[in-house]
Every structure is written in structure tokens, then in C-alpha cells.
Amino acid sequence: MSKISMTKTACHLAAVAALAGVATSALATNGMYMEGYGPIATGMGGASQAVDQGNAAMAQNPATLGMMADGTARLDVALGILGPNVKSSIPAFGMSADSGGTSYIMPAFGYARRNGALTYGIGMFAQGGMGTEYAADSFMALGSGEDVRSELGVGNVIFPFAYQVNPNLTVGATFKFMWSSLDMKMAAPGATLAGMVTGASGNLAMALGPLGGAPWARINFSDSSDFSGAAKSTGFGASLGATYRVNPNLVLGASYLLKSSLDDMTTAEAEASMTAIGGFLDKGKITVVDFQMPAVLAFGAAWQASPSLQVAADIKRIGWNSVMKSFKMRYDSAMMGGSVSFAMPQNWEDQTVLNLGLAWKANQQLTLRAGLNLADNPVPDAYVNPLFPATVKNHVTLGMGYKVSDKGEINAAVTFAPKVTVTSGAGPEISHSQTNWQFMYSHSF
Image (cartoon, rainbow, N blue to C red; front, side, top):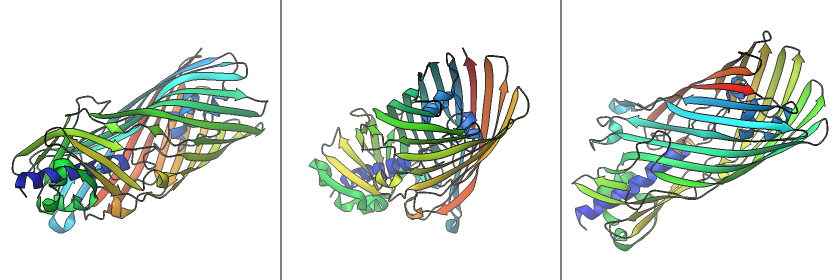
């Protein structure tokens, strides 16, 4: 077997490891979901099922849109900043690398109007996004001489509806047009990747034998945009929700977010490049097979403890196990010919998240908020990828709202996720903390 064939195969297998790492830790907050959507709910620890939170309701429990006053409309314009702090190291060898990917921007907007019992609208929300970037001279580059980075984003255009069935009961639903995108540049040793092949054809099938001897191989696909990636897909999603007012001071809420229906993420025919030690270069197409976002079942309550104090709590169950048992991809060569399929075991566990929050109305203009978002890590340590560790567990949140006029209001929230350190099955020790921000201006009509 030729050296070129061997290193070529290593490149193909490097692709699956990189893509699997990206997909499994896109957000690294509550798995691949944000700790909260919109600064009102986020400031209260992500509690959203029974809280009047503005148009961010369409990204959580759409029935809470029915809390708007009849005959009114609301426009929200928001900006989120995801700020991960990730470090990978191998202490026994004195090697460490800090990620340069420390800020990811997520714009959002929403508009809703209530006419009688019906509330309807439109919105766009970044479901989340994250990445890391390691320097070309770090151990993560494996001596390849190029930087290592990846970035994934998932977003929605949402069409929500809420209907007040009677004075106490409101139901809601959303229809979502979704997209996902991915950039990735990664180096990986062939020995680590050899066991992931599930099938091969053409000339590539002949190159699999000596895979383990490749010291490093790379796959690169990346565009120049901060808001899209070289590999893209679109699809659909939906959710259902309800709220019930038990008495003037107590509201119960529930919602169910259905599993997404996204097409496979793909690059253009020759937009992915693969290189390996020895000067090998190839171009081809990457397909990430059946990447989906999981279903979420949530229940919550909001209690108006006094005219100035509201207390809220939610519990969520996220179905990671049904979508993250393994991560699959295929590489199709545009030069050599043939294809190779891969599967990376993930074995994620379903995740339970507890959201606790309170809001205190200091005066007619100012509202202060605080909360906790408590969860476990759904990814077994053995499968955590050092490029994108989904290891963050708990979050402390603070927020505020300020009415700047009769029609205008500013809301903001900050989230602190304390550092969590794990040792992956591949050996590296990974630490990860976050500081995230959300800002929103709202105008009522």
C-alpha cells in the first residue's frame, strides 16, 4: 500500500472525529441547548414555562405569548454573546492549549400581535453556537503547522400561535424553519480514528489497511462568515405548549419541543480539503448524516408572591439518547474516487435540567432578576472530544429590565457557568467555563 493512500485514509477518518466533536458540544450549556432564550427568562435561570417573557416565548413555551394584552403588539430585537473559556492539557507531558474561540454572536428578533383570543407572530432565534480555536503551534495541531478550529450554529425562523381557550387556559404551537451550519479545521492521528470506519467503496476502500501508521492528518472546510459555515443543512421543527392560571397569583405551564427534522449537512462537491504528513492533498465533499436536535419536555410554575416579587421554577427532560447514540458522516472524494462512512459512538444520556428564578420589581421602571440553572453533563467522559467539550453543568444568572419610556424597555442578563474539568477517554484533561450575555430592546405598539 502506498504512503499516499495510507495518509489519504487518515484524513478521511480525521473528518469524523472532528465533526463528531463539533456536533456533540455545539453549545456546551444544557448539552447543545442554551441555558435560556431571551434575557428575561435567562435572568431567571432559564425559567420560562409560566413566565411572561416577551417574544422569546416562541423559542420556549409559545402559550406564554397569550399573556400579552388584547390589541397590542410587541417587537423585540436581541443580541446574545456566548463566551466559552476552554483549555485542553496533558499534564503528564506538560502540554496545554487555551482556546482562542472566546466570543460567539447570536442575533435574534421577534414580533407578536394579539387580536382577541389569538396571538401570532414571527421570530428568528439562534438556538446556539460555539467553537474553539487552537494555535498552529499547540499540541492540538499534532505538528501539522496549521491552526485547529471548529464552529457550529443552529437557528430557527419561528411562526408562533397562541389561543386563549378560556380565562384560565391558553394553548400554543410553533412551526419552525431550521438551519444548521458547520466550519471545521482539525488534525488527528490515524491510530485514533481507524476503528470508526463502517463502510467504504472505490479507491478509498483499498487504502484502509495501513491507517494506524499515519502520525497526523487534517480535514478543513470553512467559509469567511461569522454567521454560517461551509457545511449546511435546512429542515423543520415544531413545538406545543399550554398555560393554566390556577388563581390570580399562580400560573402553571408546560411545553413539548419535537425532535428536529434537519436534512444532512453537506459541503459543496470540492469545498472540503484533506491533507496529511508527506504532502498529500485531496478535495472532496463532507456529509454529516442525520444530525438532529432532540425533543424537550418541560413543566413549570410562576408564583406572584407579592406585588413586587415573582418566583418561577421549571423542570426539563432533554432526550439526548435518541439523537446522540452515535455520530455518522461520509466523505466522498472528488479526486481519488470512492467514499468512506464512519460512526463515532456517543452514548449520550437523557438530561434533566432544573431552572429556578425570581424577579423583583424595585419600582415602576426597574426590575431585577436572579436564578440558577442546574443540570448534569449528558456526555460520558469517555466520549468527550477535547475540541468541543460539552461539560458545563450549572449556571448562575443575573438580569435586569428597565422601562425607558411608556413603549420602550431594555432587558439584559449575564450567565456564569463555573469551571468543570474532565478527563476524556482519549487522555486529555479538559476544563471549560462560560460567561454569556444577552441584551434586548422591546417596543410595544
